[in-house]
Image 1 (cartoon, rainbow, N blue to C red):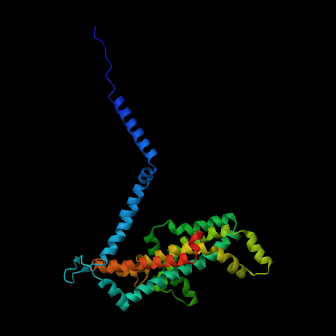
Image 2 (image 1 turned 60 degrees about the horizontal axis):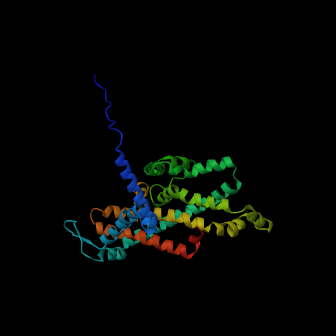
Length: 308
């Protein structure tokens, strides 16, 4: 008589392997429990590697490259310390004009976004019905749903000669601005407006209605109430929004390529030199970083950052 034997289950893990993993996990847990600094280090290791190596490391390489030079015949980068790139940026009138023009465009975009966000935030927070508020919130964030190039290209079509804007203004005997600085400011304002509108609207929602009512009861008109009551309370929101609108406008160059026409900004100068003279492009890339640092320093001096 032959006895049927059940084959061993090969899929089941060995008992000693499971026990080994469990004991190893227990050891690691005990080590992390008794060493709080090691626990914090393990927690922040990956974020710090991401921030330190990929972000700050790339900025450090950019800063180092800015002090190198390029062979004029072969365009090969020579790792030799020099200040020629910064001297060229500071002495060439074309580079100075480009830097000042870019800063002016970024400030103009920020002012346009502020002037649009103030009345819109007031209406949404204090006047609009919940349904209208939801519709406007969707409208404000709608530009964030589409791709960047799609939005910029749509504005390129809008500002084209004989395009939709010219067609709309034709009955008034007017034409659109065409490609240039004005079109660039309008396009950048459209792109970055949500970053200003959302914090301003949120700040308006936090202003108690009785403050506005008290101002009105004391005889202040609508604009006086907005100027003396609302705007001081909205200053942190304006500062927060302006950090995004200003810095993003300062570093953008794709919109300038599509709708800027012959307008040169820092980004276009960097893009044109990135292959021919990388150290000069790196030196010019430091300019917006210094401008943003100065902007944050001035914002900090106002005390608005403490209220964020």
